[in-house]
Amino acid sequence: MSVVFARSDDRLGEFALRTLDLDTDAALLHTWVTHPKAAFWLMQDADLARVTEEYQRIAEHPHHDAYLGLWRGSPAFLAERYDPAHVELAGLYDHQPGDVGMHFLCAPVGTPVHGFTRAVLGTVMAWLFDDPATRRVVVEPDVRNTAVHALNAAVGFEVVGPIAKPEKDALLSVCTRAQFQAADRPAAVDRPAAARTEGAPA
Image (cartoon, rainbow, N blue to C red; front, side, top):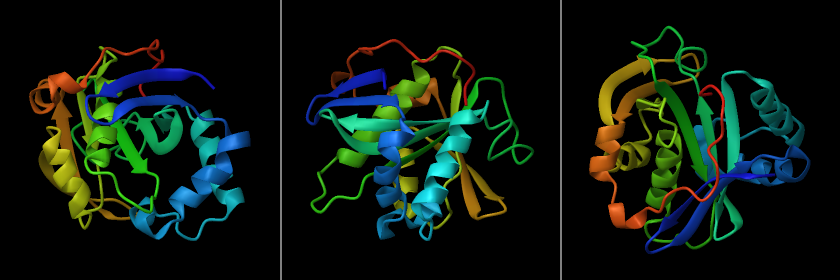
């Protein structure tokens, strides 16, 4: 399990992303994705075997991968990266070179930390744009997920419009590097503490 990206938030401290190890992470992921607060993750009824199978499939996919997010060294969120020309949005939108798709999920907590989800999203976006090949980040959250729409807008996403996916009605939004940099707070960012993951966007 190696750290692929790290970022320091001026208020909340260190965030990082590391590779998934399903032998040790699957049970934790299962508690996250089946929690009532993760309803939009669409895995509410999944058992441990199904969650393990899903993330094994992602690990083996050439255009999709997943990472465990750490806050102050402890597991705190999940991030997925995918190539929207091949996964999730293939044939559903006007794909451009350098587009990278993203999902993120914060772990359920008893006492929310103010600004935590924004810091997680900022970390994931900084990680994706750390790859010079990334020109835009593309997301397709459920149209009903108003909380994430507001978060996306706060880090620079611009709404393209609704699209119909097999599993949901989604709100397609995109964010360029310049839009993210304009929205991000420079004081909150350190340069990555670990080498970037190489390979095609997934």
